[in-house]
Amino acid sequence: MPARTLLAAMVLLAAPSAATPLLASPPSQAGTDHLTIVTRDDSLQRSIQAAYVQPFTAATQVHVVQQVWEGGLDALRTRLKAPGNGWDLIMVDPDELAAGCDGGLFEKLDWSAIGGKEHYAPQAVSDCGLGAVVIDTALAWDKDKLPITPSWTDFWDVAKYPGKRGLRKSVRGNLEIALMADGVAAGDVYRTLASADGQDRAFRKLDQLKPYIVWWSSEPDAAKILASGDVLMTSAPSGQIATAGETGHRSFGLQFAGSLYEMDSWVIAKGSAALRQAEEFLYFTGMPAIEARLLRQSGDSGLVKGLNDGLPPDLLAISPANPANQNGALRIDSGFWHDNHPKLRQRFDTWLDH
Image: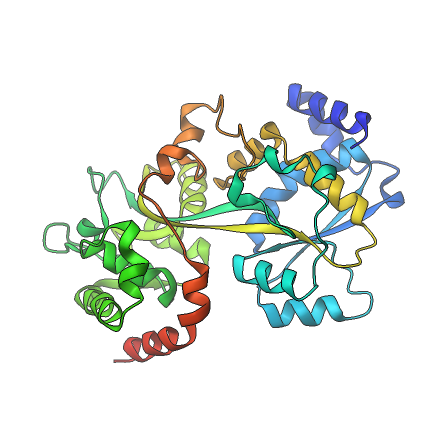
């Protein structure tokens, strides 16, 4: 990374108010370098624009085009194999990362060009991927209506805490939550789910709650049903709840114990003409002070070491990468879902219809 880039980035961070006019308009040399980055949803795209893209463009003169994709290995393979696909830096989930790297869809990362492996938490480092964001699905509630810190067991207790409950309309994640509500320790969840008896147990637990469930599909909807009062508690992406509470001036709580987390990663498309610019972007955004911008914007955190050092208490409390929040959380086992998702999704869909 050129010294001017690092210097400019530090100037931006040291004087954000003075930098604002500069960030509002692209530099005059923007046409000399181009980089297309592709993220997973509109809200994250907007946060990355404010937290990463604007200061990066101001510091490097690289013009960044942002796009959104819905995910899926087949769609990714088709896109990247097409002539002139135009995608350079892409955010992928664990399954897409593993299969795409094995299938030659992504560049093998030159870690010396992006800060070094030791600069990141170990789970963020792989041959083709750099951990981009920790996505945490936590138990969320309205503190004005429920003045306790609930657990998944409380979530199921509609007699003691009357009201509707929100869950994502997906088998993935709900079986884990159901087992934890039934007393299974987080560390034993996938061992239990590996058996037919364990899967039956999870569905029996869901049966108990089924009449009280309000299903949500998109991440913003999880925050909306809580804010509207449609549910007393809900599973929800922690970042959505954190930002919804702040922007709506609402007192929402987040319970990270028993939450489910996974990691999306940055990959560089094989043969990208913007390889150098993509590496520069990863270097730039891999500084703790820059990743802290994303946490402020979205409630989602990256995986650079030192990110949590010096954070104010309000940000530390919502950071999915905070060790205190990860204690007792469950990392989603992508291998289990790769092997079992088709049959369990079919069973879940049948269960929904009856």
